[in-house]
Length: 154
Ligand code: NI
Picture (cartoon, rainbow, N blue to C red):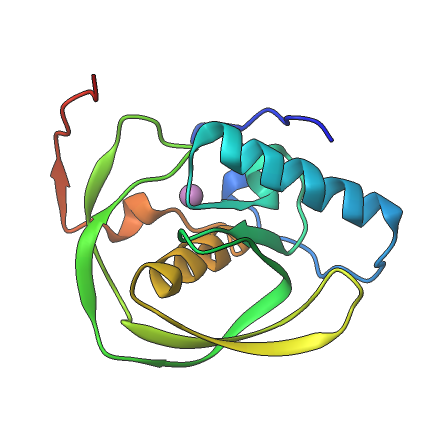
């Protein structure tokens, strides 16, 4: 496993639409392992492949209760609303209030290509929506209603 470099918001890859994954091979598994290691090292909640320079529809999230890997994810159902402060590993030091659905159902493939559906709520739903946006070249900055200053943690 290896830590990958996280690109920042100036990088045009973050505005690109990512390609569907068709090969579920060792190269994909290596990337997934590297992405989760990179996510934990950065202490983030989610990471999408374009953030490590790969234009493919892959994301990992860990909303606090374990890692979830999404390949070719789609939100097939959403309901409710939540408004909370959001950030992004590619936009260091920027935070703001974003409205997201409170619940969603994601359909995706796992690392072996098997389809699954997952119902998510609250932070997990927020993280999935944020990461899936990345796969379409969208950043949370576009959705911020109000930016906030967060004090550096000691
Ligand atoms: Ni992000």
